[in-house]
Amino acid sequence: MEAPDVWVPDNEDATAPSMRDEGAENIVDVVSEHGSDFPGQIHPRVVWHRNDPNTRYRGFQHMLQITDPEKRAVEFIDGFVIPEVGDIDDWKKADEFITIVEEEHGLEEGSLAMSVIVESAQAELALADLRDEISKPTNNLGRLFLLVDGEVDYTKDMRAITPTGELPSWPELRHNTSRGASANGLIAVDGPYDDIRDVEGYHGRMTDNQAKGMLGIWSLTPGQVVEANKAPLPPKTGSWLLDTNDHAAELKEEDTRYVYEGSALELEETSDGRYRLRVDGDERELNADELREELLDLIEYVPSMNDIVDSMEKFQAAKEAGKGAIAMEQSVTLLIDRTEINITKDRMWDEATYQAAQTPITLFQDVYENRLDQHEELKKMYGRNVVERAMNVG
Image (cartoon, rainbow, N blue to C red; front, side, top):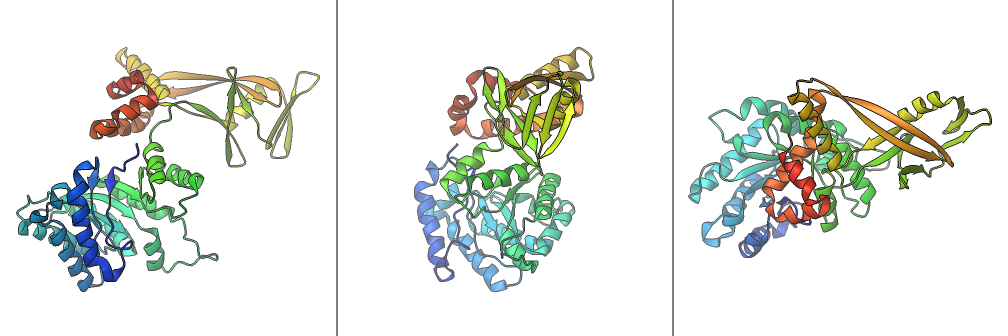
C-alpha cells in the first residue's frame, strides 16, 4: 500500500525549463536502472502545449529519447502523460507523435499509453467529443489511459479570480472529467493537493471525488500515496456517524454502545418519560418514538468491507431463492449525555442497491488482481477470510 499504482517521473513543471533535456536523460538513467523494482506502471510526463508547436516538438524529441531501445528504459515505460492539451485535434496530434515514436523504435503500435491533463476550457470541451473520436480507425486514441485534472492551469485559462488568491474547487471540472472517463472506459484522476501537511483536507478532497466516481488522485509525497491507496477501499471496521449542522462526528464504541461526545447535540430524559433534545441550539420535547425518528435522520453508518460482503451475500442468496428485494436491518444503541436509546433502521435492497454496493468491492477486486505485491498487506488489513469472500462475491 506504500507504492503508487502509476509513477509519473516529471519532466514538465517539476523540472526547470533550461534543464529538461538533462531531465529526459535522468528519466532514462533512473528507469533503466530501477524500473524493474517498481511494482506499478511508469508514465513520464513530457512537455506539450496546445498553442506552441516548438514545445510540442520538444516533447516529441524527449519521448523519442526516453524510449530509445538501446538505453533500455523503454522496457519499463508504459506510456506518457501529456499536459496542456487543447481540443480533440490536439489530442490527436499527441497520439500521432506517440505512434511515430513506436514506429521509429520498432515498438508495437498502441503499446504506449497516453494520459492527458485537462488544464484548459478547450480540453474540458474535448471530453464531450471523445466518445465519437476514440473508436475511429484514423487515430490511435484507444491508447488513452488516464484523464487528469490540472486545476492550477485550468484556473489560469479560465481567468478565474478569488479574493484570497486560492484556487476555486472546480467541482464541475472534476465531474466532467469523471464523466468522460466513465463514458470511455478510462480512469479519472484529480490533480495534486498542494497542502501536503493537511491530511484531513486531503481525505475530504478524496471523499468528495469518490462521490463523483473519481477514484484516483495525484500524490506528491509518500504519505499522500499511502492515504490515496487506502481511502477508496472499504474500511476494516464499520462506524456510526452523527451528523449535525453539516458536521459528522464519529461515535465512540464502548461496551456495545456508541457514545456521542460532541457539543452540538444534547439529550436528557424528563421526569414524565419524555425527552428534551437540543440540536445546534434548537430545543424540542419528544416522546420515545419521535426521538428515534429524529435520531434516525441524524445518524449514518459507514459499512466495513465485511459488512458490504455480508449484505451482498445475503442478497445473492435471496435472489437465488426467487426474491427480488429484501430488507436489511441495522440496530445500534446510542449513548448521548448518559441517556441511552436503541435505534433500528431498515434499508430495502433490490438489484440496483446491490449493483451500487458492488462498486467498492469491484475496486478492491481490481486492486487485488492487478497488484500481487499488495496481497499480504490487504490480508493483514481485512483478514484472510474477508479477502477471500470479497474476491468471490458479485
